[in-house]
Length: 574
Image 1: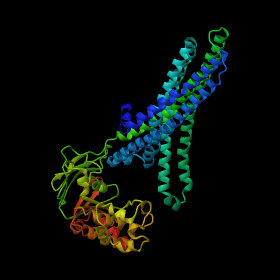
Image 2: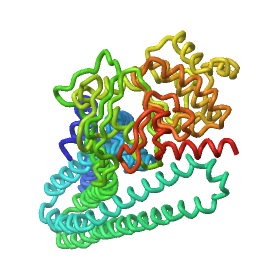
Image 3: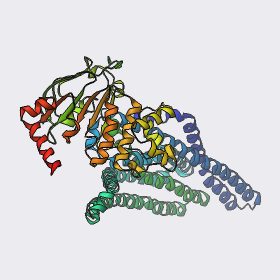
């Protein structure tokens, strides 16, 4: 983990080096104060009364402190900027990695928790990246320099005082592990809070519709209380750490006072040396206190970085080394004895064999949970098959690159996701390099151009989070325009109109019929009236194909399809 952490300093080697040099100089400047103090006291105890010594010493210290002022500014400014740039690099890597993670990862991890790792955790990492080396250098050099200086004054008294140091480090080591574990639990609890908050805010309209604010508050309070308890444990550990280490550092003053007093009483040390000792020990205690306080920041940073590495260790989607681009796709799709269990051991699909000729429309119907959507997800390899294989134009989809495979497939789903951006940007998502003329043409074919032109800013109108300013039908038509712009040879319609009212569905269906023309199309539908003209229909139930044929042959068969269609038709005519 340390090697990986240090690698993020490489692009900032110059600033890092200058920052460390500045820290070195700052730490060395601090040692001049006891030296000047000792010289002044020594001069006066020798009976001399030369004001030049006082003025000269003061001027020297002012000059040194001005230098330290400038260096501290450089350390604080450039050092923090370096830390932020390192944080940005980690965030960039995490974002890119998240883009490559499979669907299954997002099935198992809440959005709020992922966001917490990308923001809160990486902030702590950036603070450690900046303050860590700086604090270690300043404190280490100051402690070593003060030790050497004190040893030149009186090495016996120095050794007596520094006997307290091992006790300080023993206490620190004993309490550090406990504090680290407590802060890790605190981070996890904070992620839980973010997850609950993200879920609650995203579903606020549902909450209001069902007047379930009290229930949401109850669920939020569960996580909130867990957070309080985890922070209580963290602060208890931190309190034990700081109080214990502070007690030991306070003992240093007692040791200096007692031992130095006896040395002065028995004439083993001069008054000037004793004064220098008092000042130097305080100079020694300050970095020790800083080092102790740094332990908390270290624990936060290490915990955040380890959580960052946990995400980076997740296995991303990968192409085979021999994978090639899928080009000149005609759209013939074949399933050969396909099974899928989502890596849970429970088969969702088993023994699926089917062939869809290019340019044909193939419909999937059946009860919920039967496996229809799973079939759709396997074609673009959102999930991988557990057994068997899927071919497009005779080529196994695992032998082609994911990008080229997915560029060849357009998907229109029931749950339309639109970005918090303009109408233009949402349509442009289908093909980012499209021209304005192509965007407008796609919108016209989706029957939404006229509506867009009536909006306040036309194609530049912001539609809000998840398209909140649009109706269900408008969202769906915008998603259809996106697929028109993409112009893929294969189209998947996963219950694209099931959430719409009948009048809106008729309008949307016209756009979908145009979209399907000339493409291989797989349609998942509950409303069987929308797929009666499909070239072929398959009934999926319990993960297997139970019936297959066109509308007329399935109706003649008198099986599940006929029962479903008759029931729906009866409901419509009531």
